[in-house]
Image (cartoon, rainbow, N blue to C red; front, side, top):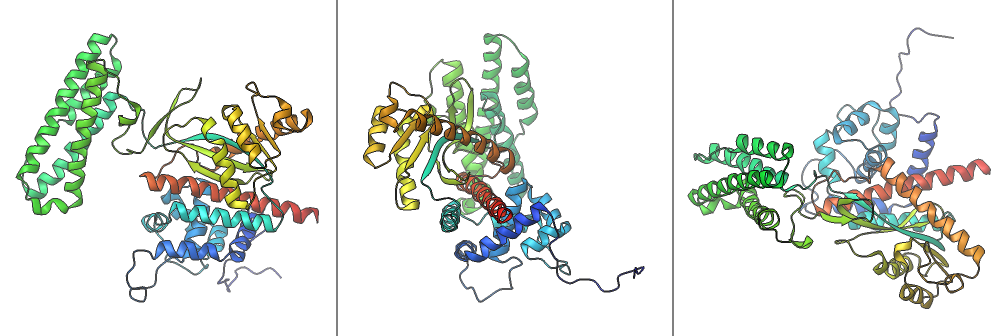
Length: 450
């Protein structure tokens, strides 16, 4: 019988039939079977709370926070869009544990506050728990591994000297204006003339004319810094604990460093060491990564180990831009930490190749260590036979597709979170999300065969 209206509504959200829904169901099972994941998340959420028994009940549980993080990284949502989909999507409400009748859902600021508390070390531990569970279910045993490096960019513009000086001018003037209203002093706003000169630098040709404009922009920046320091002297030192004043002091110090490196490099023709350079006053941790024949990127170099299942076995976010040849044995040692023994077969990109690396890998009991480029190494020294070498070489090529998958689907091209610790959290959250999804797809494929 077909009725006009369904008067009785369902209270609890239910899943429906869809491929993505099946993946979410398996991820839900994975979390249920590994309750240690929720304990780790919960420990991060309550870290700075003195009394756990006081206060009102939190709007989100530790399990919900972790599931919402997976939804965010899986789809590349901003916090605003994430908040909308949690309210609008029947599937995501069911997966994250919100009932149909629940009206009060977390706002974007609440979601950001909870997710930002999760530490990168916690996410690394969670990844290892997922790998151990995958080993138990015979999805990934870590006996065959491939290693490569990629770069995740910081969320900054290209660090031209004019842009860095302009960032100093606009930031110090903006904060100075806010402090002036609060404490009753005036600071000259140089943003208009600074922006004008910065735009002229991009449109002019000729080194002499450009350097003349750079001198003018440096002069404006110095005026801004001098005005800011005079304003700081008038403030009471008792008020220096205030965050806004602390930021004001920090940006003044950074502006001086940017001025020094600009004048040294462009006006005096001196070389500034890469370690001493400031590429962004907002993301100070950023490194310059020079890639052969592929230009320059600004962010952090990441070393990845991947298994035969496609799951990411390990990740190291490097400090600076170390040569690949220095990373091979360390990545193998870390795989032993995860699985208790070295992999039987391991394949590397050509940049990792060296006789010393091959000898050290063989001394650790690794039977076949293949490098994409031979670099004066004999095939018989690396592997048992030519057939094995060709197989491992093709196997290594697969990590390029996995890195592309991480960048396209999990936001590993550019980190949109602020600060070094949050950079690490962002990268690890993408890795954990990718591994949970790959795990789910492997389980579904197995069940279909059965």
